[in-house]
Image (cartoon, rainbow, N blue to C red):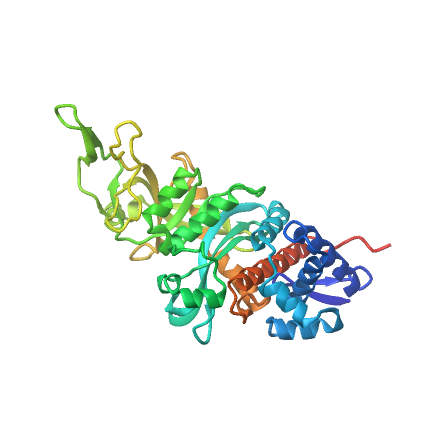
Length: 426
């Protein structure tokens, strides 16, 4: 017997069924299938397959030099370096091809937006600076990559990657030229990058699902508005200080004389959502059971679900929706406010806002609110096993190429895990 580690789990296979050469044949077939959509030269497809093989094979470091060394005589360093850093193939089309191949197999339940830090030395890697990263829990010299992932009952698959470029980088033409950053790349916030990833993937042949995100994304009124306008459902974490109008609030859109108001006038003041939930009290919480965890274990917790209108904050980057005829601001739309308040806890453990329909079941709302954590497991494999953060080049294009190839390796391993027993070779 041989033991093959796939997607974080060990699967025992009969050596006659899964000789290394047979697994390699499946990998080559998968690589050819996804790379042909983005690469128009045979040498690119070949190097792409070799790079993915190098990422999957045992080895602590997945940067280019040790990767090529592991491949022995099959790979040539200069050719691989040019392929990674400068070759003009489309990384986004590789990610799309992998997603369209893998997503239908995993039972997609949600899309998750997030970002992760890449520790760096020096100041020449594109986007690097001393900045806060949740990955490290502190300010560190790092790059930050924003990503989108499809999360399903049987696995996950990345749907997109984009490198956050701080404002100081955008304004420094010398650094931009050195890192080969395209002229068209302008400063965008992480939330703007995230919503663009969602909008891009929305047109792919992958199952659509509600978008999830942590507080850093949920607090952005502009992100929620853009997702809603694009027809995307969401369940996004927020903090207790975000102000809302409780259910039943009415908004006057005209004056007593019948003139259209520039801004609708509520019949009461907004309040912090944490204060509203505290006023509703634990007596309003209901016990909800839903399937959760990697094996679908049942989870039971207590939640409060109430409908609210979210007050626009001064920090919101995007104004509220407007009437196309009068140009006046429309009343804020009604959303779900979800609060998890575990039995015996003094305070709620989390808050979320969602634009899911008013008749959505408590079980679905609770499960989606709790589902985002699975992305942390995804990052562990992408970094810990496949070297997502091992790229050592200083090329903008190289970073995108490396993340796309790591995505391909991750997709292949996901399919292997879902099909642990293959027909015996003839």
